[in-house]
Length: 241
Image (cartoon, rainbow, N blue to C red; front, side):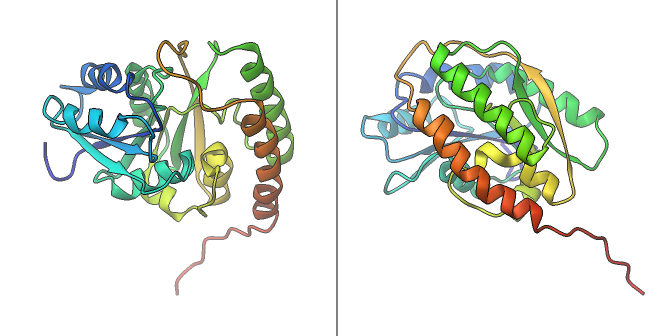
């Protein structure tokens, strides 16, 4: 692997020890021979042996890098630290529970290559959800309210599968749960976003870490802050004389 890969794949995890090896193998099959890449797993202070499994996996997956939080900080912070550590100028993110299909990274890369240069975020759009009724209902409500308030023209901001410009991401204001608002934040900085239909799979290993409370009510609370940022943004390109 070169010191500057063409793609960094960031995977945040908390207590996902049984999903690590299967997902790493799927990432390898999806990207090997297509693009020079690295994989960065960020362990959010798991209480199981996720870290031990990751360290063992490095012998079989030489592209793997492992980071760990000293204390649990949440998904957005894990993504942020993974992006900060990334060596590539382009970053793809995946949920660590196996519900995102790594093969869909190919779709995002193809969309990027065909898109105008000002498009800097490609967001996965789960057109057929494989979650239980409670998750689907809370996501539908939160997505509907978010679109009305932020007008971000994005049908599914909760999908963990995304591809974006690392430098643009690091320009964004960091806050907990920011990963749910990336399209709005990227547009706030004057860039375009594109939603790309991707598949979604049922969880087959481990236990979901998210429920009605943190999917809906926390998201609605954060929405007020993001709305405040959007209303107070003034964009202009200065001319130099």
